[in-house]
Length: 155
Image 1 (cartoon, rainbow, N blue to C red):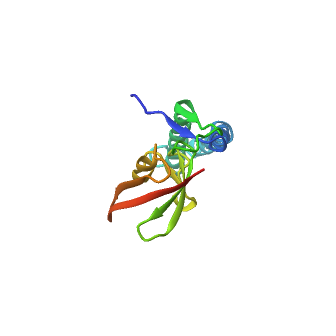
Image 2: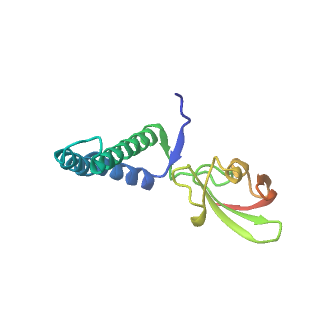
Image 3: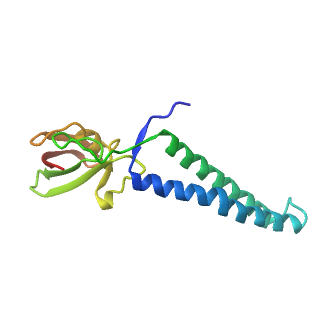
């Protein structure tokens, strides 16, 4: 299956590498210990501890696969950003129709956190802003309808 490349920050890459190391070493050992204990209890068909440990093992292995995929298929964002157009890593200040200013940073989906103002370049707003210049009006669809912003500043 072909997966699209995505972007991550250096910080996110380091955090994912740390999590991956923990899951592959410490967490796997903990789960194996739980499995050994559960097997020692006897009949596996009605052994809740065994089934729970197997479920944890599956979830752990799934998370390892996801992190491994993200690390292999993501591009680490550069600190050298163009500031006259919106690109990955740009911080953009926009003005809404009501005159309120909002600031967003364009990031990959792994780093997106709307509460902290980091939006994915795949989101409707991120897609609308991407490639824009100061003074451009951008329009995008939301569940509440079409929204219009004017790009005030790109950092």
